[in-house]
Length: 331
Image (tube, rainbow, N blue to C red; front, side, top):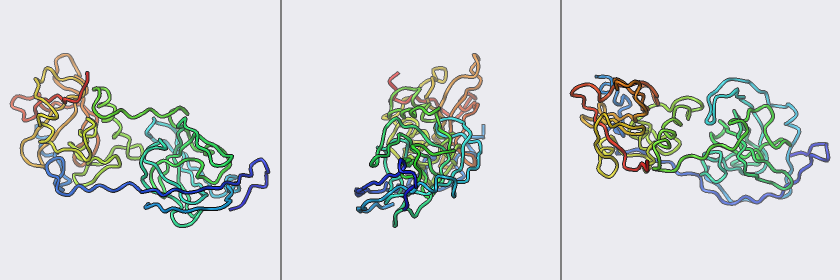
């Protein structure tokens, strides 16, 4: 590491790295139905039928400011829909500094670890950042402070404090700030209101780097829930990860049957018959007309992923889709 030749930018930091345990991975073996079972084809036929951290200490390290002056930080602007809105985003490559830095799951320094950079040697990694967030929470290293965390896509996908980057600025130059530079909205708590459930459902429309979460009965998404229809609805309802299966969502401890005409935002339409290739569940958002001939829903569907679209499931005579109301709602 080297210092900038500008005395005002010379920062020497003594950093002690605390032991950290990386987040454990979650398996989906043994789960069945639309909530698992290993068949990635999912429900479509029926639905359309009608690192490990280590303790270490480093002495008197300095921030390398030279790389911030244009070396190795080429920016390629693009448009993306990120977690906090659609913005012009940059794919920017930066060096890192220091010893071992934790990459967090969300733009909250208290969120769980999803990995690390500089795992073996100080300053060995470079990060690729596409946007940054002003968290409103100041973090300091020696005389350097910043409230910004960068969303990075490499070498680990997650959020990293800007203090880990090898530049003198308090935020990343050339990388757009999401959410207008304001503190990101707090995620809704489990259960709660109908609006919170719909808000959680909407997050998967852009959670995959600005795109929808892909469908899978076998895979687990970053938030710990299965990437199938019932795993998705379990996430939206704030149930325990990795989520119950479609039949489980009809259980008396989770939902109760209602009439189709009583559907309200956040209620469910569930086809619990058949097997994992035919069962399906969608979350009702709103009626599209006064005649109640169609509605808008959120769903996780096979060969596509997260969708927000018009449906008529459960409205046809003799339909196997039945309406249910989650018991968790407080409104």
